[in-house]
Image 1: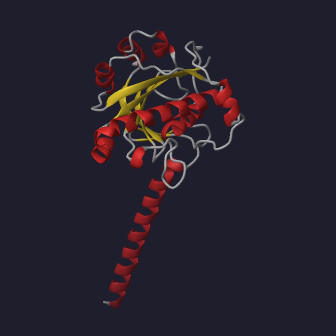
Image 2: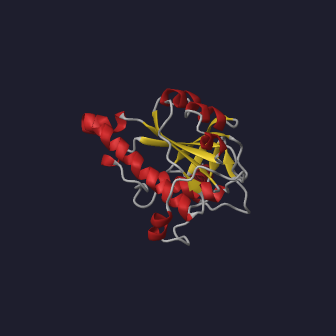
Image 3: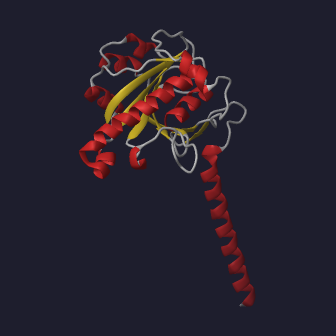
Length: 237
C-alpha cells in the first residue's frame, strides 16, 4: 500500500510539473525572438519578432524628418518592420503600460492591420494583441481595395503595403469619465498616430494620416462593433 501511495504522489508531482512547464512555455512563447527568419504561428495567430529598443535615428531627427507620404513603391515590408510599427502604436513598454498614453489606462483603441504586401504573411485583416505582441487573423484575402473604396477612393490606401486602422471602443473610457471620455479617446488616437509617423520615419518608411472615410463601411469590412477613427497607410516611399 505504501508503494502505491508513493507512486501516486510521484505521478501527481509529475503532472503538476508538466502543467507548470506547459503554462510557462505558452506564456513566454510570444516573447521569444523570431528563429531562423521564420514566422511563428499558432491557431490563426502570428507571433511577431521582438521590437528593437534602439535605432539608428534619434527622436529629434525623426521629428525633423516626419512628413506625410502618399506614394509608395511596390515592395514588401518585412515582418520585423511591421512588428516595430505595431509596437510603437500600442505595444507594451514597461509595467504593462503601452507606448501611447491612455486616460485612466482604459485603452479604448484597438489596432487592426490590412496586410497586402508583407514578407511571410498571408494577405488579410489582422487584429494586434499588444500583450502577446501577436497578430490574430480576422479576415483572409487582400482587402486593401475595399478599404480604399470606403476611404473615398484615396489610392494610397489601396497601394500601401499595409493599412493600420485605429478602432475606438468609446464605452471603455466614457464608462469611467462620462461624456468627456470621447475627447480622451480622440487624444489617444492622436498619440498613437504620431508614434506611427515617427516610427515609420525612423524605419525609412512612409505614411499619412487618413481621416476621410465612411466609418460604417470600414467597420463592416473589418467586422467590428467599434468605430474606426484613423487609417495609416504604410509603405516604402
